[in-house]
Image: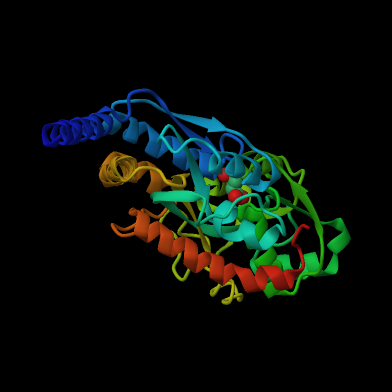
Length: 324
Ligand code: MLT
């Protein structure tokens, strides 16, 4: 009897060691809940490439856009927690969406296993290049005077661009204007460059090259300091709107109950990627801020998520934009 128990124990131990040693034994899908070419996608692809080398298996980025990123996020909340389907969640889909949808199909805390933050993204207000305003104060004045003429782009209800412009308009006292929802701010930025829409609030990772090239006007960055990637763009404090301070973030999550050994392997690979100077340079050249050691961990991500869910709840609910 004792002998059988001992053999059973050893077999169980060997099996669990084998499953740890085996992960990952096939490619991993990293879902991006927005169109290709936007900030979430760009950050996902940069870190996934390096993490793939560490893990010895390809991380394949899959873009599934819809409903401000909430459709794909809900889908990943329900997949098997085997480490083969992950999501590049972000401030919009995880911290803001619960305050924007009365019947959201996922709970950002209970339905996910946090892995770590991959990139922090200062928010900018950016306008088309021939917008009749040359600074933030002029933009606010023009939008207030001409609300019917303005089209503001975003990536849908639940996205970072939607959320941050709700906050911007409320702090600036801008009334309701027309909003144009895209599958991501990648395509939205294309239309801004083409002059089809007037302005948007977006994560820096999408914007730095287009602002530098003069294809769009960077009106202000919502951080205390200017970005080294865009030294000519003033802060919102310098531009006269000091209360508008916000950065987005993009972070890897698995579905809930992902085994701890898989979570550890993924967090380690993310940390290694962000410690690689070549990866860090690709991200910082685009203005992305590299998460510190704590922010790259599950606990750091969980703390950031809880903080931002709380921070965003009151202003988003007060704005009255929630969808039933
Ligand atoms: C957002 O607004 O949440 C993002 O910019 C979406 C995207 O990555 O395209």
